[in-house]
Image 1 (cartoon, helix red, strand yellow):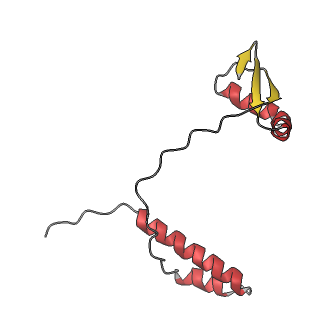
Image 2: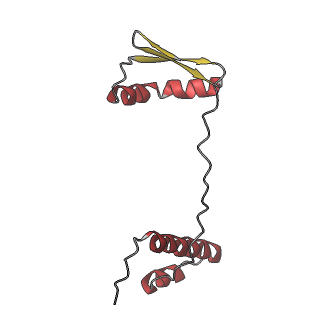
Image 3: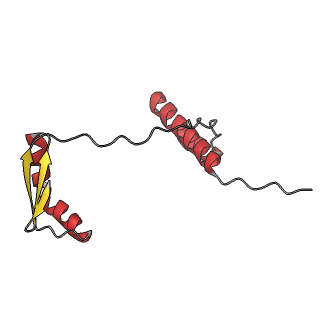
Length: 113
């Protein structure tokens, strides 16, 4: 709300948030001071908090890249996992991650020739 004589007055939406922030006040003050805010302490009060502005909507929709094949050493390690459901989940996550890595690689321009 305001900074007055080194005391930053902060509005929290609930008493639970006010208490949680109060317990973290030393860390918050240190972070604020490191960013040049001349604050010595925090004081919390419960009140109405406006929701943050929504980020702009994304016009483009990124399509998920195809699943990439797993390198043989990774597939061999995954085969050692005894829990089928866990093995399937990790395999899917690894293949998706590799697919994203491949999709995000800079494209090399084609040479005329």
